[in-house]
Image 1 (cartoon, helix red, strand yellow):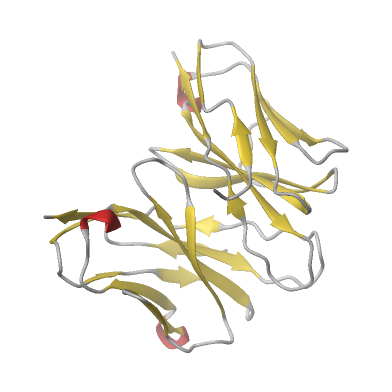
Image 2: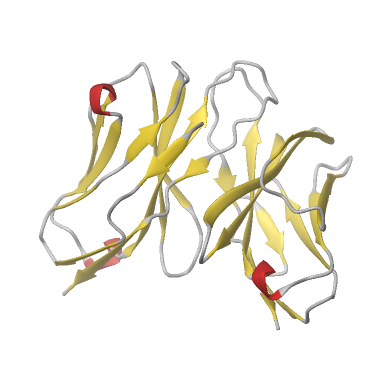
Length: 114
Length: 119
């Protein structure tokens, strides 16, 4: 158990809908990262938050948005869903520090868009 | 641009065989980190090892060993005496180094190697 929690574990929805994925980082971790794992593109970085502020964006679609709340949990919002958005979405967190700290991954949310 | 290549898509071995998973990376950074993660059939990502670019010492952890060679930009992973429980997808990843807390240290991933260890 990495200490990172993600809910829900599975999500099945229809095209055009909007969903919210939730992530709670490990206690004390200020950085949260979101990744998407799809069959055709593999694992891709989406976005990073640090202590409530967006720090970096990767291959995140405009239909997707995220935020990190004062209690440090993060939500990834996916709207106008398309079939191609079906994927495993991972959240990771890392501790604050000047040296590198591993990213610990949650169990993922498997999104299926029908 | 940073890139990680895992040329082996699938490998199948018989239990107790040794197997090496290849990883080749590209980066312009002089300081960077390399990682291996394991993704078993249950789907979670399990951290295996981190290596920074200044440390080319090989590392051994039980049946696992890693060979980092900057000259060939490779970071290969060997499992000795493989077991059925080693069956998983293994990912190699790369990250830039940053010494400012909170800076982006996103992981750049290879496409993974699916390892099947058969009894």
